Length: 632
Image 1 (cartoon, rainbow, N blue to C red):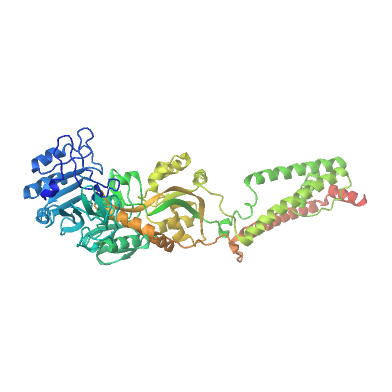
Image 2 (image 1 turned 90 degrees about the vertical axis):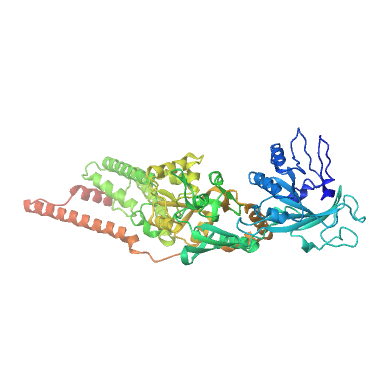
């Protein structure tokens, strides 16, 4: 150990040490780079001091960046207490403890979490060499793991030129001696330093601590296919399947921890309600669970109370509504062929045509009576495809009648083509394509699952029309919100209801259901992932495992297995016409029969009355006008 201490210069202006910061996961600094300067204050070096000097010197460390290193002695219980006092009050500091063979016993009562940045040196039997060790434990109650991570020698082999690295399979560090790679708990690389040769860890030590044996995590989850499926066990426990479930099982297999999962009590993901966090986020925040196993959206508010792991997928929200069906058009099936404006204009055209026919007939046959009724019957007959006993010989009447007949052809062509296609292939798709269209229709309600991030997305939207939807729901006390996706579908199928959910959930659960229509526009894209308790020491290890799973293609494999292909609901299909589609026709025909019967009875009574008084029931005006046409 004295040989290591001799490598430290004792001049007042600066200190230097042969400790490479590569040990701590910093790949930018590879050689002896522990320096302390009163102006830069980047690093603090405290060596061969008692605990009081260590505490005083630590106050000079203003910046806790990754290049900072605290170097101290670990030879006695007093050294261990001094280290523990400061270590528990700081996060992210690189520590190098200069210890001896007693260091495992001195550290045994100090909780060193998985994400600690502590390395211990222990002198070997050879006074010119030392071994680097790591110590960590998965939980305070578990046994501390003390494992070798590297080795340093004051002299180096002559076959290693300056600046040349050797791989893990390189020859031993000194002639006649070989240290097997399996001896170290991390991947190593041999490198020549300014003062000797070292076997150094490849990458971060912290990210390679994957043995969490004995750790038991409490997980909270919610059923949300295809992300999570729940299989219920005794005692309220559940097994999590699905895409997120596969990822969680992978984390358990790699790190060897155990878990007990339960369904979140209120069934929500988590939002702030009356100043308190609800859902899974609330359970982790209150310490009732350690990890959220679900597709939790990454939001700024949630990140204040939980730590998100690296995003495992991208979400975007889509809206669904009931697809138009034949049965929905029982009362509108025979009027929807034209828009409202067309139906408004059509009576004006009919009235105008009747008036034109009336004046034309009146002008040419001034002696005839009942010209108005004759003009109305003729025009309406033309529009309905009926002929007329009148034979117009005047050019003006011919032009008028031809115009009405031409209008009848165009009108009938458009009307019957739409009607026939609708009866044969079903109604056309919904006219709604975005939330803005939904907001314009006062009959429609928009809903979503309670306690999801979508609540905040709608409220904070920069699009005024979308924000008005949230305000409308608030004014109605959010009665349109549902407790689950299936409840949302039930309300959608009842009509006049639009439901929003993540695109992946909609495609998986209802991508084969042609009863619903998915609006083409998508909203609020963002990442989702698993979350752990704030400050959890496992987040770095879990993140590294997720990155490895993504690089190996496991995430894509699980994702593709979770989402089926969408059904082609645009394919034409025919079916027998149901009674409700023609019921309106029968009702109209029935009413026409009743009206005709009523008119017939009225005419019969009038004719009988005239016959009783000895009057003729013939209409002379019409008879003369028809006879005149026939003669001409």
